[in-house]
Image 1: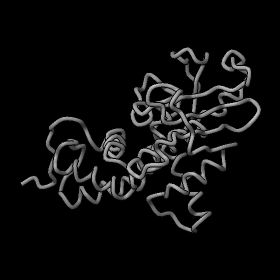
Image 2: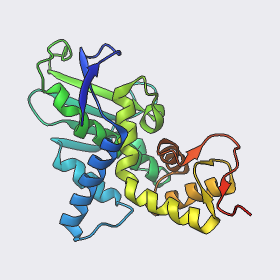
Image 3: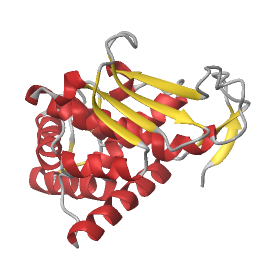
Length: 239
């Protein structure tokens, strides 16, 4: 279960700590429940349209065509928290108007949704020093580097980045995909991301869940199915 720990970033006296398996479980339950309610079954990939509907259900506004050019270097998404209303999510029009960035749009949507689902309750506490603007709002600005693979020292962005992958590539389905490849290739254990088996895993996850190659690789690394480097996968054939 989520627990409170000291916040070394200085944002709060304490901050929420989630175990990775807890994040995976919460994300998969949320996505599965939504799909079952809408379609009566769970199938992947989750469409981009369904992602937007899901976000709209838990926010006061989803702006897919926001001009974020003045918000900072490479800012592609923002979540605005408020004491007075549900969060607002803004996505750069740069992503929403280009078919070449369809996968980046999906990871950005789910990253911001991660902030909404796992962080909105924090701002609901009385934290007057955090809301210094006249509007009483606080904005989290997310650039491309933190959206996909933030460093774990920045817990706010790391958690949102992790759940972005968990929403798009739920754990149980990724396991099934990886285990099929292990069986087909007679391999077991962690494999190199640059090995033939590792490349096959990345390509299959990319295809099944409609994500970028980078997003698939990061997800498999975080789930410990891949490792960086050139270690050769172990074979089931011992003779």
